[in-house]
Length: 494
Image (cartoon, rainbow, N blue to C red):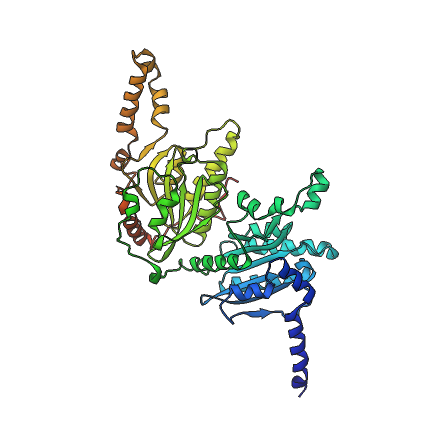
């Protein structure tokens, strides 16, 4: 009888929590933002959400689990209508609980970020709360996919939490920064806004966000799409959905008549099922292209140098962008397909040679350390470190080249200048002699066919047949097993 007498009170309290503070919710709506529970409802399949610790008062976060396309997902959504979604001890306890459950059950974690920052009234407790969340995020890295959506303020430690996730999606209302405008203005004397410091455009340009969306709803749809392309955890294979695949044997007619590659996205999109690509960090280091897509219904990761950006040279930011993406793919056994058209590392007097060398080492480390299937397609030039890091036998299990591909330590003009300096000086017509020597170097040394004859290229293929060759290689490599020396971890050259 006592239980029955308490039911109305329980229901009343629950409804009060679900209703929230009307004035605070009105402000949230006026800012063009959904509430925490509305966001969760849109993220998860209909009526699948199970909330945890519903009655934990004033924690500023809603936590629980549900389904996305029938697969379990854990979620926490910071509630800006409750003390600005500020992070304190109770807030962290709820977040840590869902992360622990995610590890035990092998399910992804999605963070819906909208917080004013640390709960200042809790002092050291608030700092410890952030530290505990970051430590748990690090422990889960590579175990289950972790996705952060920046749907409001994400300041200080929260920004670092978000950056430790595998992928970050921001909405137009998202603001991601370590030091807020008041702190920056006080320290520098310059007046800056939150939008300038960490608005959607700033996040895209700095690489702090992998994708951007115009609203909460659009950002959440992107998160659902990403989840559909990732495995539940590191022990599962990438998701396979044959129903969304198109003909694996189709010729890619768009590539048959392609004379000059202006944008690698135009090369890669026709190769993917239904021309569907999820481009990542498009506004950051655009000289390097990264995207998720599918071939034969199975998820793959695409990496490509952009030949129209300084001859496709590898930059510090471009190499790091690619390395981070490759390591994420490898963590979840997603095959990596690389398209190479590059003159090698960036030539610059302004950038430290040490920085360039370290970035190249990071890219090489990422490829060499990858145990997932690796396929390289040399579409044009593969010069110097560009070849070694992205298309060599150390970086790829299968290597294909298009007709006319060039593989060389350096381009023909530079090679001739070094190898034939005296001969050029003695020539009656230096210009004609240079052209002759460059063509000779191209034919005898740099032509991709020579690399194929030496076993460094598996096949020289017609561009239109690229999808067929990739599909066959992926099928063959699906059972790949790499045995590596026992170690705690490698020392990535950060």
